[in-house]
Length: 558
Ligand code: GLC
Image (cartoon, rainbow, N blue to C red; front, side, top):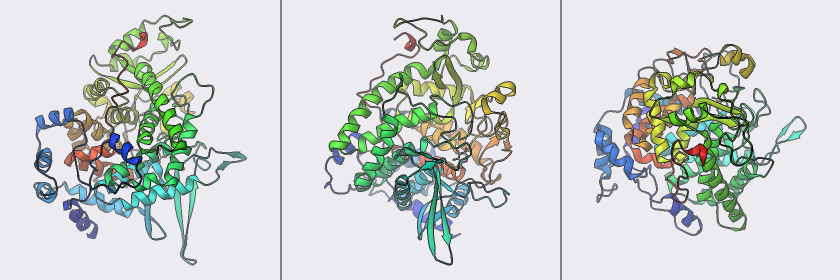
């Protein structure tokens, strides 16, 4: 019960906050290391357009928000408690906080992360007793939103130290900048010592290094900075170096003809073979977001400047490539369907020589007249048209999607609600692959059978990303609908890792219970809806210099 009390106390205090700076100011401030810590105060950080749309469907939560933050009135002289106490939190919230605190991992008495799952009933622990970098992100956001930044700072510093380790797989040395997928704290009660073991892919099933970890680390560093106003952490030589090492891995020159990042299967949240090798949307969207976050945090010193220049060039090329070639809507699909093939030279319309016959049947029915999305993968003669949740949500949050594309993604989610959300938000990807294709693509993976786990399973953790995308695009009703669905089951089912089935009705075949990111994801979604200003931690404003180069549906010809 103590945790519950603690939560309520924290919930009524006003110290969790978003600093007053916008991204532009942040980069200016970073130039001046002696700038004093910013006086922190909540502010609206989502764009005005979404604010005006939000206020149309005024809800209790938003009423509370408006009352506390109405223009001309300082948030400081209106205790947040009065607004917050005007409605009862859902009873699940207290349980979720209690479960989240139970998952804390300590290193020498300091909290440094949360374990993936606290499921004592499960016979197999595997690596679910470890702190995963990607899994910790929603936990970190929940703590930041609740005014508890210390654990996030500890985590950022601890993983930074791990980055410095020499990493080997058999006799092969991994890139210096690689961040671990996960780490574990070993307590020796006799010697009273704590030690850490980390996994950079050398123990992971499939032996793949996580490309997403470094990107999430940069994104989290910005979230911490934005939330606390404490610029000093990002400015330390250690953090600056950590960022540069990650960036040198992904900005290095090679034989690539595309600005996207070439990846092995299983290098992200989908960490088993699922046919996402090549240029998966999840990694491209995180890459884009991490580049933009690094851009505002890198110092303009000699080393930093060189990276800043490389980032700016890459962002320019990457946004063009993604918005042009990964974007699919009704018109685009129809154009591809009618493509000529075997074209040569610069005048080619079908640049990657996609054979129309390779388009799967399902996509013709799935594509609504209104709406669109970034497809799963684009490479020579291959367009993986599967829809992936994480990549599309991150594309919205990072403004990789133009405002028009962001709205179209939300239109599609609404139009295909049954397929993408069904009874549990939300599908990791759509549709599932089955039969012969499943055999070939997954290598007969029994964990990834159709509509299960990574193969069309429903993952409650994605709720926070969906909610953030909804707030950013001003589509609050969609978030509310999704949260209602989650609330009808998550606690009752003991916070499963994932659900199975076409509608996500069944607790996943091998799903862990008390999966931490399912718990934290729910809390983050609730807190953002209650106070949309939290969105600023995880969302970037449109970069005016990166004007959309294309119009929807006309991309293929430019
Ligand atoms: C599974 C998931 C991965 C997650 C890990 C820990 O391996 O595929 O995304 O990070 O479990 O929860």
